[in-house]
Image (tube, rainbow, N blue to C red; front, side, top):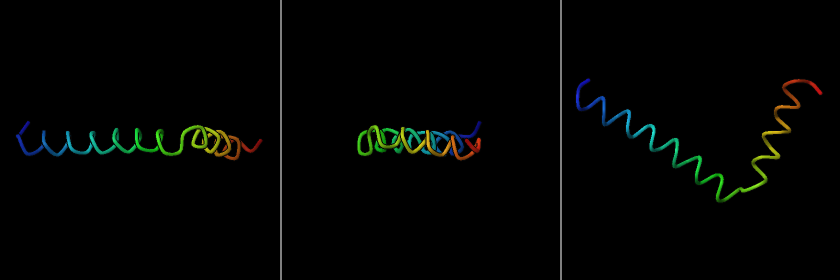
Amino acid sequence: MPVAAKIAVGSVVTAIVGGALYLSVVRGPAIILDMAANAAAFICL
């Protein structure tokens, strides 16, 4: 794999993990409630 592709993949993975950590720190339990509500709406409960 070329070096540029490795850097691009690493940057994308870092951004996704960083975004997930940011949301879990800032939103906390509210994001879990949001995900539960969205799952219930998706399943049509």
